[in-house]
Structure formats: structure tokens, C-alpha cells
Image 1 (cartoon, rainbow, N blue to C red):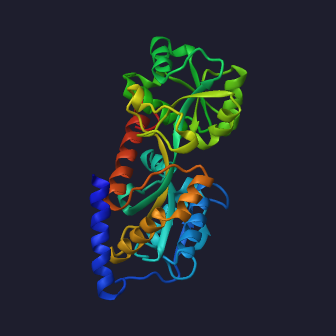
Image 2: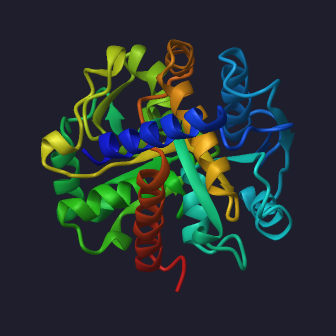
Image 3: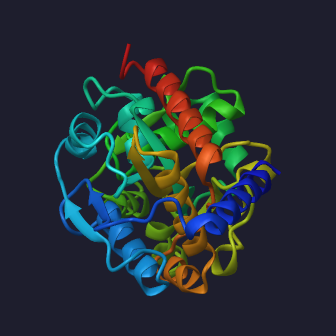
Length: 327
């Protein structure tokens, strides 16, 4: 309901803005910062969204993409906050990794409220899986085993301790009633592929990752997905994956992809960009891009997205304190 209200309000605002003079603001030489080197999620977000915005003529000309690597996104964040806080022509790619680093204080001196959160363009939902030969067949069975004997289950993921893969398991465990999440054994590897290799070798008993990186192993029959951490079952070929929620574990773990903008961007410019991203998201062109790249639906914008990011940061911060990553 909140999403419908937000989108209705945006539509009404758009109508009145258009009735005055097309838009009170229109972008000029628009730019997207990808806070990493070419390749990877942030670069993909800028370039794929830029191309679709251009193809649909939702922006004038093309969207210039600038790669600004460093500090896990911290260099770009500081640049926007300290030097480009009023730039109406700038959007910046972000994801769950951005929220995680903000929650853990990895961007020294910077906080979530120094920018405005624009909207999401999809998500790669988290999964928890076991090998095909495992006697465990449901998420509650896995969590029960961890609850009874934490040392008997080691979970592998492709992020460092305290990273997003690790935190997804902790979120699920917390929702299930495992109060001491520090008891959960987690080991990190250089990417989800390496983690699954260890799972298949029997070195570890469970795997945490994202739908896109697990798909190939599911197709080959090597692993079985115990749960996908989405609110509802995913569409199409992923619809056979049960959600954690339907098994009584109300855990959501979406590696969302979206954008933030400078904190002092004008309201007219913010509404312009929100309208452009919203229209792009609803297009068949973007739906095709999502499908080709394994992105699942996550359509949040404006105040709703702002609230979503704030809640994500708070949840990650609480978990990070609990496992001793931050004070």
C-alpha cells in the first residue's frame, strides 16, 4: 500500500510539473558515478540504467559514467558529500554493500543522511543452500541443527566475515530465535563459486550467497536451495525455491541495486530523477535487462526507498555490534 501511495504521489507531482513547463528541472550533461573500477555490480548499474534511460529518451542525450574506485565506495561517497552536495545532474550507483559499509562505519566521517536515496532498480536475493546429498531439506532443519550444536554446521560464503553473505545467515538465525549469533560458524572464500566448491567437497555443511551465483549449481543438481530470502517466491525459473518466510523465518536478504544523489539536490531535480528511474523500471526494456542479468523485482522509490535503506543500515549495524565488528 505504501508503494502505491508513493507512486501515486509521484504521478500527481509529475502531472502538475509537466503542466507548468514540461519539468521545472531537466538534466544537463547527466552523470552517474560507479564507485568501483569497470566491471562488477556498480558499473553494471550505471551503464545498463544509463543505456535504458537514453533508449527511452527519459534523459537528454546520454548518461556519462565515471568510475571512481576506492574505499569500497567510500571515495565516491566522500566526493559527493564534500564536493558535489548540490549537483542536480548527478546520480551514484549503490547496493547492499553501500548500506553494509555505512552501518559498519567504513566511510569515516560519513553517514546515511548526508545523501538522498533515490530508488532501487532490482535485487539479487540471498539464498541458503546445502549440497544435494545433505540430509537437511528445510531452513528450519538447518537452523535447528545450529541451535542444538553450533559446531556441527559451518556455513560458507563469498564475502568476508561481517560482509553481506555472512550477515544474511545471521539475519535468518536471529529471526528464528538464535540469540547468540556469534556461535554460528562462518568461513569466507574468494567468491561464491569457491564457497560452493567447498560445500560440494564436504568441507562445509551450508552455503550462503545470491540467487544469480547459485543458479548454475542448482541447474547442475549439485546443490539444493533451502530458502530464498525474499518476501514472495521469485518469478519464472526461480519459482521452485521456497522462501524463508513461508517456512516461518521472516528474513529478507536482498542485495539491492539502486542510486543515491547529493544531499542538497533540489526537490525539482530529485523528482525529475525519481520519475525517470520509475518510468524506466516499468518499461519492457528494463524487464528484459533484469531477466538477462538475474535481477529480481524490487521497485522502491522516494520516501519508501529512503526508509528501506535506513532500516537496512540499522539492522546491519545491530548485527555488526552483536558479533563484535563494531562498538
